[in-house]
Image (cartoon, rainbow, N blue to C red):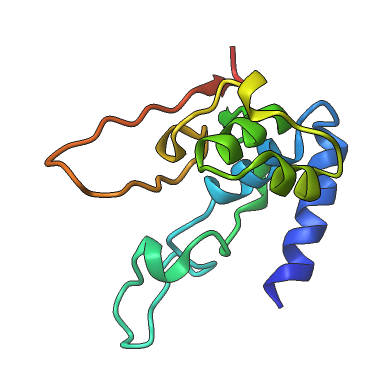
Length: 140
């Protein structure tokens, strides 16, 4: 039942912020969730202990926080192309995905950990790996 609710929230958010890319709407939803329920007690997992962010994920949305999240991650369709090229997809595969001609040699590719996304995806091969994100402050 989460999907219809999130679609409704996304359409309301699109009405409030028509200039946002779909990714900004998704990120506002992902980063504006609560760890407490309406009774102001912690959401519980299947063991009746307070649920971690991994158990609740991005589904307990606080609509007031979503409308004014404070910060949003900017991500344009071009960024996804840079990511796909960086992941090693060949031009023909990306052409099929985006339904237009793409030439990765003309696009500056980025490593998967650098996609400006609120979560991280890294391969742990070294002791440490730096990842950066860029956000826009909506309250300035």
